[in-house]
Length: 292
Image 1 (tube, rainbow, N blue to C red):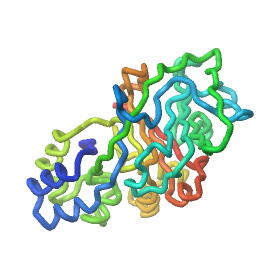
Image 2 (cartoon, helix red, strand yellow):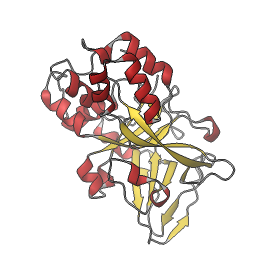
Image 3 (cartoon, one colour):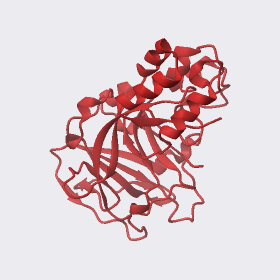
């Protein structure tokens, strides 16, 4: 399977679709694009919306996240919700407050304990905290046994994202009876169109909202299998339904500037159900990671 997701301006993606797809199918495909906030390294006069690495600001009395029996989690990133152009997204982000992302990155055990979506006992190895804007915050020192990642400020730009054709929303539109996670006989699955998308942009990157850029199989399917628990056939309609309900909250790519390498040039993902997001139940966000 070719793994891809692409992002860019709506105009550029429209041009690509009309070049490689019949006009009516191109319009359908364009209707399935999702807006995202792309996060890049801030320089000069760029507005800063968050950071990779550095030291997090936590409320007084809030315990540094720990995976019991394994140790403290590393601080990966923080996002200032008030600084984001969140009105451009189709997910219900808070208007204020801060999202803080933590992950057990293997520093303490040389990568022996892995945080895996299919292993519920490992879920405490990734944590997403939401801090209200009116909470008293102070910068917290990283626990001594961990090496903090260098601070890299982030800026934001709005881009549209396109999912691969085996994503549940794309498959459900063009070939609802096709096997989940597989190519099917349709113009959006032709080699020509897939290669055009790949050449347009194959970067994972850091992102809030939009379609996730999966390094392997769609992360929505991977997390849906974990949510349903136990062996689930890919022919089971519950798997497709659950995968289709999940939305990307944030993804963080490997990043040289921050000294971050997730496996073999992989990425970290946090997904969530829209209802939990609307209710700000960030403790229900589900984590997975993939690498090449």
